[in-house]
Image 1 (tube, rainbow, N blue to C red):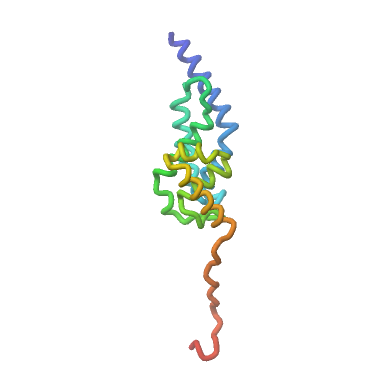
Image 2 (cartoon, rainbow, N blue to C red; image 1 turned 90 degrees about the horizontal axis):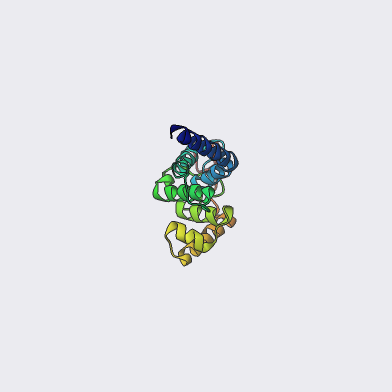
Amino acid sequence: MRDRQAVRDARKAQEFGGFVAGAAARLLHTATLLTAEAPDANPRARRLLIRALAHTYAHWDRPPGEDPYDRARRHLATRFAQATWHRSRPHGPLAALTPRERLVLVLRLYEGLADEQTAALLGLPVERVRALCDRGTATVLHPRPGPAPRARGYAVKGLGP
């Protein structure tokens, strides 16, 4: 009996190790896009990934046909949606998006989920997902111009000391 359990545990660890080897980089990239951190400095994304992988491992004895990548991605997305990741300073082209817009855009465009799948995952109406995706896409493709840089060290005649 004890030998059977050891064999099952070893098989589970080996299968999960193969899954992590194949999926971890993509899941980390997804988490980094969600948190809008720099790729080389992404502690929140790494924490999200670790939690998603731990959850996936805990539920590894899944029903036949269930995709572990889908489970990990679902956990990643829901943890991001429930957390307050927006308190950090975002980085990169997705920085101008709200956390919800970023989540929808990453799931739709990077992960390739359909509107209906994204809506079901997030518990939103399909129309809301489409609106968030459209607004996020418009924001990324046509960013608002930022404030003009302040000139330092130059005195303008009649305006400075």
